[in-house]
Length: 101
Image 1 (cartoon, rainbow, N blue to C red):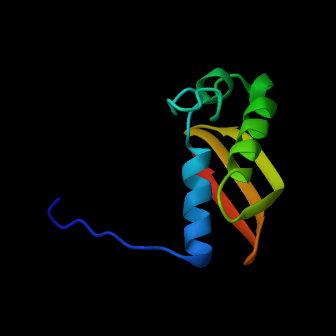
Image 2: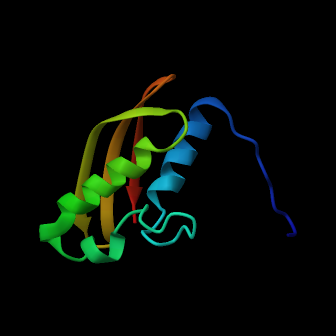
């Protein structure tokens, strides 16, 4: 790929990137474990089911290497989709992820 840059991350940036990546994994997307992943389409468009989306995000983020636990998770419906904010506990201390999907 012309102009592509690859960067090897470690420490805090690597933990944050990995946690964001696993949180973006949709249910059924991983052929080796179709029950893992976030039930995005089944939950994101129904405000009454946001708790399920929150629970899925917590479970996925806890599976990321370097994440000890999810201290706090907020999920809300916004115009552009879903906004979530997660505080995760890691060896580096507490880190915050803010994403819109």
